[in-house]
Image 1 (cartoon, rainbow, N blue to C red):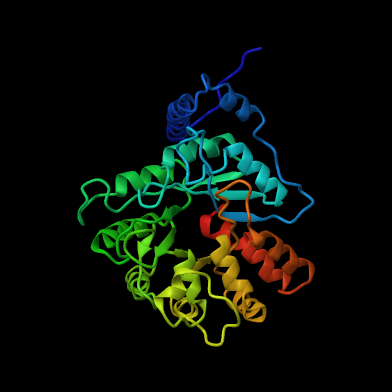
Image 2 (image 1 turned 180 degrees about the horizontal axis):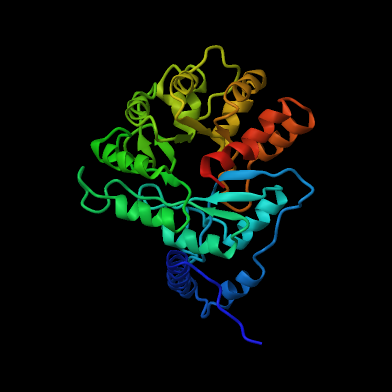
Length: 351
């Protein structure tokens, strides 16, 4: 009996070859750096990568997780903490009944202990194609560090390779800086959404710099109406309610929300603003005043996305239990729950 090769288009074959070759180089470098002498761990992983979440449970798509290949133990956050390994991330997803997740890339230097470039993200996702969805990230200072930098070849390449989102975007310059505007104009052409992390001041932290009241974000939303922005981080979600000073933006305001904040105003005004509910900041925004949170989720049910921001081991993410409670106790309509936990993300990322 003779066999024939499957008919694979040149573009698909090129994509497979690129991911395989780039990933093996990245994987080998990372594992050798950690004192592991072969790639057997990665090769074996691919054979057992088709683990799926319990099909009897509701589908949940997490729009924001982190992982990286092995790093030297000294390459870590203070205290020795690192992102989870790919296999640990999958285990955490299984424990939380998360079906699929969007894996973030991370390329900016500020406030980070390591970079996770898109090629590494693509390789990790290729090992778990049924569970992980790749994102890519760029920095508006890349290439020529000018407002005329041409990002289209890079952006189109990452999109062809399967990246569904630009994130996590944290370039530490003002959100409406001309460098960012140049990049965003080109991202808008690709149709990819941008997930951003805001910083309340220059220095000492990471994220795009924004002022109280989110004026720079509004400038960008107005300028690029066809570009979807996913809001994330403390300085963003603090403004779900009225805030009185900059200090409130640096933490997680507690207690009842007596007056609606700028996040709600901007979401009503700009349909291209979505909300990433991941991390402690997203959880705090919808849970600090439960009744307010229920109304908020119902009003913006088409533009909110469940997420965890898995970034450490073990995770400490009350949003997982909170969404279980929302479902079990019928605190929000099932339609709202399903849109936030998976339908909105499927639609936005065209999954």
